[in-house]
Length: 433
Image 1 (tube, rainbow, N blue to C red):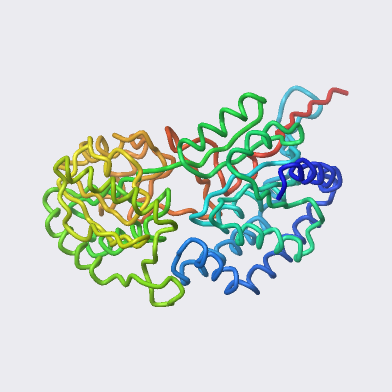
Image 2: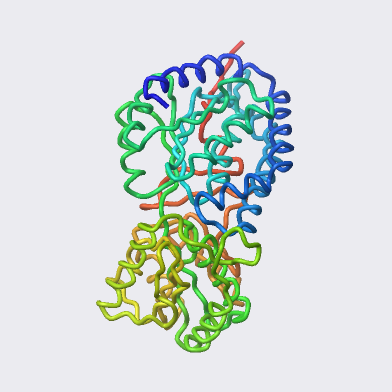
């Protein structure tokens, strides 16, 4: 698309907003109900495009589309309560808060969950009365256009959702456009800095969901079989290309060897292959250069003294499930985000040390802790420098729960009630008679 068409699309969104913001919430919700029906009717087709463009195993792609349907359902049923004005008792005759839409929102979205990431930004924003334009990742162009077509075919009025097929360099101009009121980005740390800087120049709100290097802590009293099986999913889903994947696996010394042997055995059972094959569990990474980057991180860590306990080889974009031991905090597999199927194992003596190792990261997205001493861990929740703490479960996103991080993992929240309130004007009204 010619760059000079972009302002026209943004203007279309701005014009549509003037009507959409006054459209009854029940009517906006009806449109999302129609969208959900169309989404699920065509989930196989959409899933195949996800797998073709970025290599995700087809079963995981289908699950991603289905999860988008669950998100639609969540806001269909809960948005009326979330957007209901709230009365606050004061000395005034009346005082209350309303939640008004902001206007045209920009979403800058990644390739790793090309439907889900867009939906979790766009659906609550649209339900709240905003209109959205989305700059999607350059390596999923068909998926990006399919989402716009889906919105149009479901009956959403013109201008409510639009795809902007632009380069990253053009994002600054979009943010500067006076019709754009706020921006949400899911992506890398550097992309977040760039977008937040541009938004700040124009005093526009930004929400950033950036990288993570989540710790996955396994205590000696944990259900070891459950911990191992969950640790496989936490690291290998989407070939490890997930911000909330478990990446640093902290294992208590007394069970380290047992965990490692079981973990290696489980990795050995994983089937790598054609992402369109329903039996495939690990597909290729999204691009060859991304696989090369992970390979470099592994090789640099090995040069610094790490040991490859399992895997470690690359064939074009395919990267074998890999386990690294003898890991220290100076190594790339510990202090950088490894966006691929590589698990770094670190031993710890006690919970205090595990928490210290977990917090020794510039990221703060989430942490998993496996233990039978649930009450004990609950007393330490505030010690974890994270946006989420999951006990006896892998960190995952759920429409019902707020999602986001701290530190270099970004700021703001998506999903749940907190997510729909990120892009509204929380307006105070006070009346004296």
